[in-house]
Image 1 (cartoon, rainbow, N blue to C red):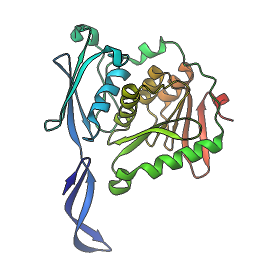
Image 2: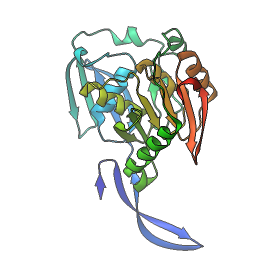
Image 3: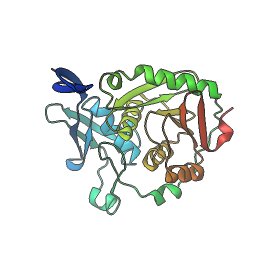
Length: 261
């Protein structure tokens, strides 16, 4: 039996030295290929759900599109897991992306096309957002309650866009950066602003997560997991409040603590 993002397999479960044939559910991992203006851009390993959101979010996060006004057409080949995106103005991708490709540390072997140094030359995120610590606990609890695919498989990450009171957009994927891009893509298509919003993540806060957040102008990134040293450095430089280890009634603020009340 297989559903989008979920597959049931026959397994051998060993418990207390005894073997037993059982069924188990695992997260589906599949290659998604993105074509931009009829050129093959990248193949991502991802969960095969909401792949149009993932493709558009990836393009937006990489600065290859700025919004829906840039788009001429978007089409999905669900059988082959391919998304075709055409923009109104077509540039030479080979020239634009030369020397920019980096394999990220994320699950699913993600790719980014900009250098960390590029982001440091950008404008820091400015926001008047202030959030109570109690609100962060409630939002993280809501994120975990929505993680149905994780509850079934234990094999995916979750991401969400939220305000101080509730989750606005939610998605999940085998890669934490993919989950974030799906959220960004849905916001782009639905015209949902990212300014003064909170990004929630279930996974490690690595440099690429902070880089994507900086490019989107997100002032606050929160996770129940740990950050990396480069993520903290980038958050400090880019004006982003970074919160990790939000669990068990505690959390750590690694950068710009002034936004947390």
